[in-house]
Length: 261
Image (cartoon, rainbow, N blue to C red; front, side, top):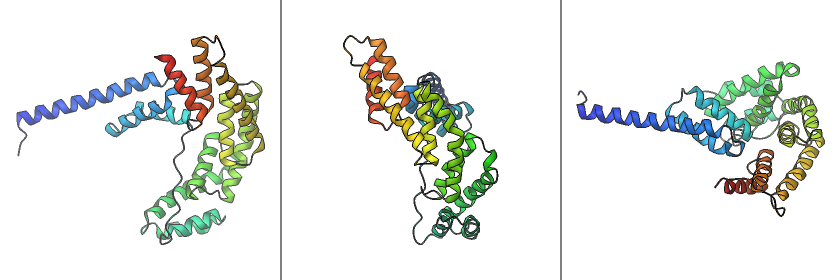
């Protein structure tokens, strides 16, 4: 049955309203992208746009910007249920038997959604491992995270090799930034090192020194006579240095938000 004029008008109005809402969120996102303290808001705006307009390249770029600033990592998959054949795939992979893991994943990919996903992940991980010594930072980090995703959070022997390689690539940057007292870069880099090499003493030391610097900066916000602009600069630096889940990050962010009012 053809649409009535009223139905067409209603549909046109709804489409216009949706477009207006998406455009408003993109406009908000452009403004938020310049403020490191509001990356969480930027991520939410970009994700809203992508729900309504999945093909939006600008929204995807804004989301990538937010994810990089937040050092976002997709959560590791849960350990498969005992009855799921994917469990044997994960077990083989984390045990260091990549050939068996690939074979088992291919065998169960039609009967288990997790096996189907593991088949794709294992193919990508295997491809990257073949070029381990030639990988750049972004691919090494992808490999370290992919390895933990396959292993439900556990690291495989091959993943540990990738972690050592990542640490070798990133250590000069972490130490150089720490020496220059550019703590945001130093701490972000150290956290990446620890993703692949959790016991890396140098990265842990950089984080310790950076945290001490963040504590000192936050303390300046409450020094008697400290001007509002100076407090804002100190609080902003603390927000940039520490991850969102850190308590001091949240305190500094609140202080920064109060200063804008």
